[in-house]
View 1: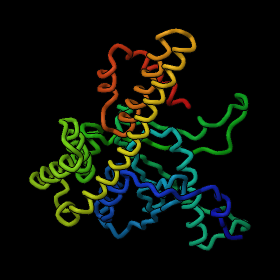
View 2: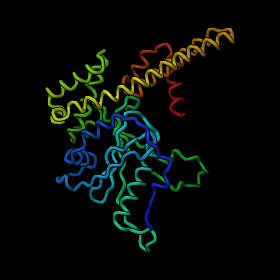
View 3: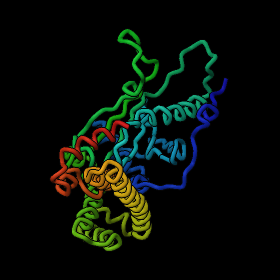
View 4: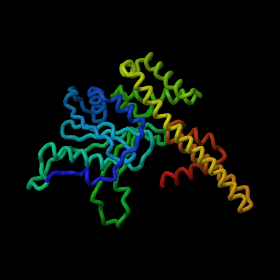
Length: 320
């Protein structure tokens, strides 16, 4: 009996949208760099990049969300993914990814589910490299079982998937960065762009200045010399999508103001207008935080008089 899980997950659909993870995969496309990342994560010292069997999945889940790097080494199946926004559904995505990876593995090895012996499977590891600005911890673990509706203390879910989230923003997980220079260079490059944007530079200038700095200081220099234009275009496309989303947020702000005014007229109170304006402003700030343009601390600074209200609203928003 041959596995064919692709028929099971028919709800997967494509959407023409790209993310910063494209650049992450571009940087780690070389097996040597990928092996260095693996060794840094696992404390191993593999030397031969050709031992890696790369099985990159593409377009397997909603919104064209792609896992970045999945590969087999030894008796392990490793799934490496990059995220620039916080997503509590990473374990569920991991479940879908692994289902397809194990389908490929079982079929490629010629195993049959109807056999009388247990099929030996590679041990799964799921690592998410996160460089958004909503979450400051060095490392955390998300589990699929937390998403299930409770059925009583004596009942255990039949499924589980664990995602280990590593913060790879500049200044975080220093030991890991020291072990994998390429990962540290990537973090430095992204931070340079953010710093330039914070100084008020326009996007193209911020990217160009970051590239110039990195070339001058040996940061991703080999990659930038060979593919400078490609890297530049990836970043501009990514941030153009952010600009589109920002436009939608501004529309939300205007709608919030309009709604607030209507409520104010209906109830005869100024509070309705203020509430509408506040909610629209909260949406914009939340979007900037989630896109990594500003930090949560910077968001709080911009809305001092309503900081506590914003924090409570943001926490509720993340639960939805």
